[in-house]
Image (cartoon, rainbow over all chains, first blue to last red; front, side, top):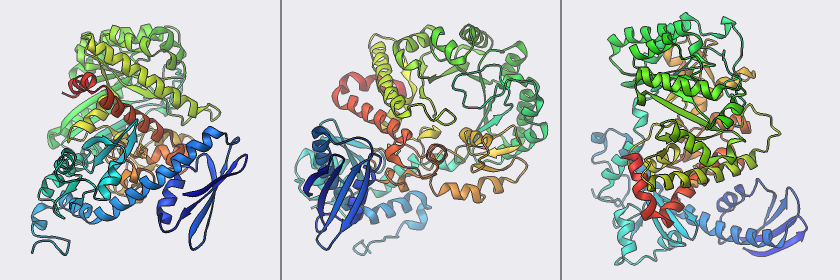
Amino acid sequence: MFDFNLLSENKISFKVSNNLFSDRVITKVMYWLQSSYVIEWKKNEEFSEIKLVKKNGHFNDEERDSLYKRISQDLIDFKTRALIFEETKEIRNILLIKAFANNDDFEDYFLTKDSPT
Amino acid sequence: MYFLLPFKFIDIDDKEILVNEVGDYLVVERGTAERIVNREIQNDGKLFYDLHANYFISQSRIPKLIDNLATRYRTKKSFLNDFTSLHIFVMTLRCNQNCEYCQASSVVCNESSYDISYEDLDHAINLMYQSPSPSLTMEFQGGEPTLVPEKLEYAIQKSEELNLLYNKRMTYVLCTNSIELNDKILSICKDYQVLISTSLDGPKEIHDVNRNKEGSYDRVVNGIQKAREALGFDRVSALMTTSFLSLDYSKEIVESYIRNGFTNIFIRALNPYGFARENDWDSYFERFIEFYKEVLDYIIEKNKQGVFFIEDFTALIIRKILTPFPIGFVDLQSPAGIINSVIVYNFDGYVYASDESRMLAENGDYTFRLGKISDSYEEIFYGNKAQNISLSWSTESLTGCADCAFQGYCGADPVRNYAIQNDMIGFRPTSHFCFKHKEIIKHIFSLLIHRKDEVLPIFKSWIA
Ligand code: SF4
C-alpha cells in the first residue's frame, strides 16, 4: 500500500499495486471495512486507488494510524490466505471426497497427475 | 521442501493461531503463516515437526495419513449422518408469565385457538419418527406447555406407541417456567422420564424484573425444588438469559445458580429480533462480552477453590477445540442446525426451521415456514424452501466465514441473518452473532495462551 493520505476530515485515500495484490484480496480486505466506511475504488493498469469515506464523524490521528496498520496487515494476511487456498484447493477436494464418499469407491482414486499410479 | 495442507489463521494478542481443517490448533509467533507459505520453515526444527505432525504441512503432495485426516473430518461432521434429532413441539402460545424479553411472542389468555390440535400432534409425531436419527429428542415448548397437560400426555403416549415400531432412543424435555408444576404434570414427567428445562435468570431482584412479575423467582425456585424431589435432582436444568439489567450482576447470577444447587450455567445473550430497534444492540453486545468474561473469570476462580461449576457455552467451544467430536449444539453447526438437527412443529399447524422462524411468521413473514404439519416428510425436509435455505447454511461458503480461523468452531444461522439483516447470507462486519462468537472464541484462546496451566485442567474437567 502506498500514498496513504487524509483527503478531508472524513476521507482517506490510498493506493494498492496490482502486481502485489489481486482484486480478490483487496475485496476481502474492504469487506470488513464496509461497516464503518463507504468505499470508492478506481483501478488503472498499475494500481487501485481506494477512498474510504467515514460514515459517522471525522478521522482523528489515532484512527488514521490504526487504519493504516490494519489495512497493511490485512492485505498481507488475505494474500497469504488466498495463496493457501489456491495451493490447497486440490488436496481439500480429495480430503472431502475421502471423508464423505464410501471409502471403497475411492481406494485407488487419485486426482493429481503426480500421484502414484 | 514441503506442501501446504488447508489451514486458516488469526492474530490473537501477540500470537498467531493456526487452525487446520479438522479444528486442531497451534499457537505460533505472528507472521508464521506467511513464513509457511513462503517456504521459510526449516525442516529440522520443532516448528516444522509441529506443523507436520498436526496436518498443516506435508512432505508429500498427498499426505500419507490423508485417510486419517478424512476420517477426522467425517467425524466432525457426523451430526449429519443422523439428520434431524431435535423435534420441538410448540404446544401452545399461551403463557402465565409476561417476560420482559419473551421471544416466543406469547399471549396471556385462555383461548384454545392458541393450542396445537390433536390432529396436528398426530401428524407431527409421525413426521418425527420418519427421521433417520436413532436418537430423538421431543421437546415441548410454548408459550407455557404446562398449560395443556392433557395434550402433553397425549403426545408422549402417542410417541411411545409409535416407538414400539421404530425403537428409537427417546428423550423427552419439557421447557417450562416452573410456575405451574402441579402433581399432574410431575406425574407425567415421572412416568415418561421427562427432563425439565426451566428458566432462572439469577437472584430474585433480577429474575422478577425480567419476568415482570413479583414473586416469580420464589415460584420458580419452589417449582425446581418440587421437580427435583419428584423426578431426581439431575433431571432439572435451568437456562438464563442476559437481560440489559443482568449485565451488571455477573457474580450475583453465578452465586444464585450455585445457591440453587446447579453445577452449570449457560450464559445466553438476548436475541435482538422482536425487540424495539432503537435499543443500542452494538453496545449491548459489547457489554455482553465483558459480562461473559467476568462470569468466566469468576467461575474459573470458583473451580480453583474446589467448587466444580461449568460455563456451558465455554465448555461447548472447548469441546470443539480439544476433541474430534461434534457437540450437538445447533447454534454452532455448519451446515446449520436448522432442519439438519432441529425442526419446530408449531401450534398453528405449520412446520418451521427454528423458533425464530415462527416468530417471523407471527409478524407475517413466512420465509422459513417449511410446510404444513400434514404435508409429507419429503415436502418439508427436502422441499424447495429447505433447498433454498441450504444455499446459505455453511460457514465454509459464507462471505467472511470462509476465511475465518474459527469457521470450524462457529456456526451458520441463516434465520438470524435474515431476521436481523434481511438477508440469509448476512453481513459479517455488522453481525452480532459473528461479533459475539468471534470475541468469545478469541477470549478462550487468549486464556489458553496466557493462563494455560491454570485454565486447561479446569476446561478439561468440564468436558470429561
Ligand atoms: S460468524 Fe464470524 S466468527 Fe463465526 S465463522 Fe463466521 S466470520 Fe468467523
